[in-house]
Amino acid sequence: MFVPVVDKKNKPLMPTTPARAKKWIKSKKATPFWKKGVFCVRLNVEPSAREKQNIVVGIDPGSKKEGYSVKSRLHTYLNIQADAVWWVKDAVKTRREMRRTRRQRKTPYRKCRYNRNKNKNFLTPSTKARWLWKLRVVNWISKIFPISYIIVEDIKAVSKKGQKKWNKIFSPLQYGKNWFYGELRKNYKLTLKQGYETKKLRDKLELKKSSQKLSNKFEAHCIDSWVLANEVVGGHIEPDNKEILFIVPLRFHRRQLHYLRPGKNGDRKFYGGTRSLGLKRGSLIKHKKYGLCYVGGTSKGRVSLCDIKTGKRLTQLAKIENCKFVSYNSFRSVKLNFVKEEKKA
Image (cartoon, rainbow, N blue to C red; front, side, top):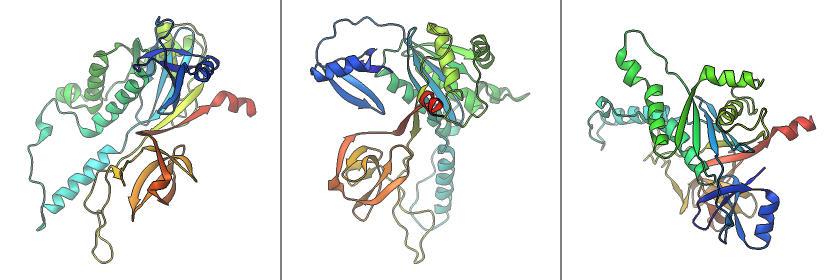
């Protein structure tokens, strides 16, 4: 386990050990802080050296879950298993249906716009949300680790015989990943590996991948991301760190003027939005009773609070004066250590 380090200007340096970070904090040479579930330290003095080793991020993309590994030749600093953004397609469909029904009634509605889908360079909302989430995770990692390379398992889109347009342009998977690769190449050195190449690397190290793709095991997704990262920098024949940071993106509902269906008396309640009584939804707060949690919706002058590990709602009746703001947040996280669990079992 290593602690990420940044300088006074928040530029990432090489990680350090927890013991050394504790000494820095005690002597006030560094200030501790959390960066979206990862404990870090910020140096208050000029670092003694700024030499950096090659650190690579291996990415194993998936439709529902995906793996990330941050590794150098000597150490594996971080393993992440993230849930994918899957709800945008259904939300866009519901929005489209509601707009069409309003146009048939005597009620104000948005005028029809130009069909943006006719533009060949247009990226559909659901596809962009999926690949933008992956880019956000990479950018977050780059703020606490000095990344040199990125290696991604290149996934293939389903092709159709005799349909050149689908195979080249209209396949959402193909077009989305090309956009993602283009954004990565702007700031990082990118390497791509095919799926069969990843399997050869696993077999070479005699590592097995779990068939339970939706489980939280290291062998589900992080094993592939680790193997890819190890291929670039080398240094290990088996994973030296199986701790996983499990992250789930928070779903924020757009502001709606009413629910989709009226109540018993025909009244429609307000729904959605991004703020709750002045607090941005998803923000981490400290509550006197519930401790560290994040902000949900609001109703009748109170806010709802949710558990940061499970996402379950803790209360709907929290007073705003009892909530102490900690930081902004866009996903919830929990750290899992399967090595310790195996020993206990």
